[in-house]
Image (cartoon, rainbow, N blue to C red; front, side, top):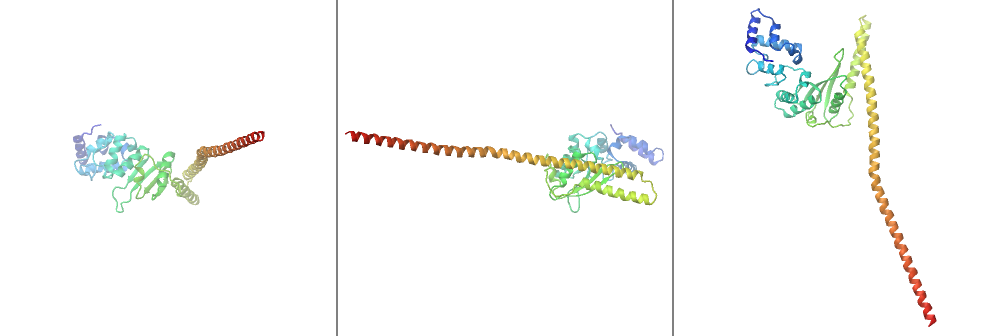
Length: 323
């Protein structure tokens, strides 16, 4: 889709004169395609900015920024997006790997470790809402959102949280959203996302997804009590309680299976070690057996030699007597 810059700017002037509506301008800027890229509040800010200043964003260094928007509408990343509007995580995930790379480089302010970390997460289908590029304390941070049914992504994020020096804040957004909002931060956060895999580390840390759901359940139960006390409708909050309990039951069942699988794997590894040790033991036994057999052979040979010596001496004695 090609954005007609001249027509857009003329429409802006007509809006200022009260002769045109924002809906017309929105259609010229991408129409429904904007819904895929920005939330409703961001779209309003974008329209207001171009009407007020002639730019789609106040922080655009040069020009109107329409070339940047045109790129986004066509799934192409152009220009510097580090000071741009928040872009929907699902839009980023549907980009090609090449354009995801361009996006990560565009928003990471030259931080190569952050750029690679973002690419790593996006390639796994993990949504990022925000990240640290500039901060007073300069602590790396990633803000993620994981859907309640994205079990594999939950495992990956939990593994990341369990790395040394990583802390987290979290909450579960229910009532139809059904998304875990996770903030991870720590000095080595980006370092752990440089390779193809995240190490599995057994650290005594709580499961952030289980805790988030339990906190949501407690909140809903307290709210339900308050609603009942004040004679309010409890239908929606009761649905949320049922959904939270269902997720927690499923989580506990999955965790039980994981623990069982880990126990079975430990037993398999022990068996494997036994089989690795056995050949060495068999070789040692064989060596000892050969040594014992060799000693018996040597002893037997000595006995034979003695007998032959006795027999020889006896024969010589008989010959002497005959003489």
